Amino acid sequence: MDRRRLNLSLSMASPLQREAWAILSAIPAGQRTDAVCHALCRAHDEGTMLDALRAVLREEWGGVGSTTEKPVQAREAGDVGSDVLGFLLDLQSDDETGFVT
Image (cartoon, rainbow, N blue to C red; front, side, top):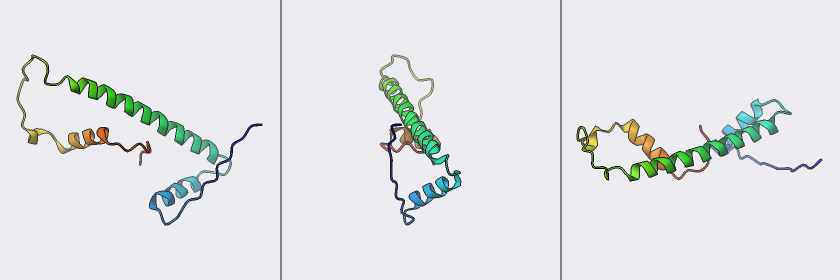
């Protein structure tokens, strides 16, 4: 049987690592390896999906303003809600951890 071993040491001084330990500790022994593998693969898949979505949005938004159609109503910059701006900033972030908290 071909196996690989990973030794992980978590610092309880780090809030993120302390939270990870609390989550891992709640998983029954014997199920932790599968839980970690599922979480890593899911985070990787979500990161890949988000990268693809960002690429599509950049491509589509690249054409904004180059169309010959006139906008139905001109908007001022202040008309955009802060929730929309936050969403857009999140899409453009360079954070590649892939973990959702």
